[in-house]
Length: 155
Image (cartoon, rainbow, N blue to C red; front, side, top):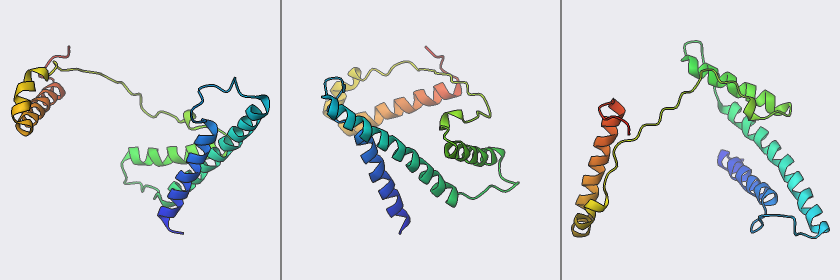
C-alpha cells in the first residue's frame, strides 16, 4: 500500500465518522422518533470510537516516519518529539491531546494599524484594477512593516 493510499483511506474513514456524529441537516435530534434516535446514538458512538482509533493510527504513522532528534538538534525539536511521544502515550491510555504540557507560556499581543480606506480607491479601481490593487497592496505592506517594527502606534 502506498503512503498516499493510507492517508486517503484515513480521511475517507474520518469523513464517515463525522457524518455519523454530525448528521447533515439536523440541528437537533429531539424531534426524532425513539428508534431512529437510538440508531443515530449507536452510530455516533461507534463513529466516536472509530475516530479515536483513527487518531492512534495517525499518530503511529507519523511517529513511524518522524526521526528522533539528535542531541545537537535545537531544544524545541527535542521537546516537540517528546511531546508527540507523550501525546501518543496519553492517547493509547484513553487520554486526550488536551493534557499536553506547555513548555513555555504564550503571550499574545494584538496590534492594529490605522485602516486603509478602500472606498477612496474605488474610482481608480474602476479605471485600472491591476494598478490599484498593486498600490493598495503596497500600502498594506508598508503599514504591516511599520506596525511590526513598532514605528506606528497601535490604535
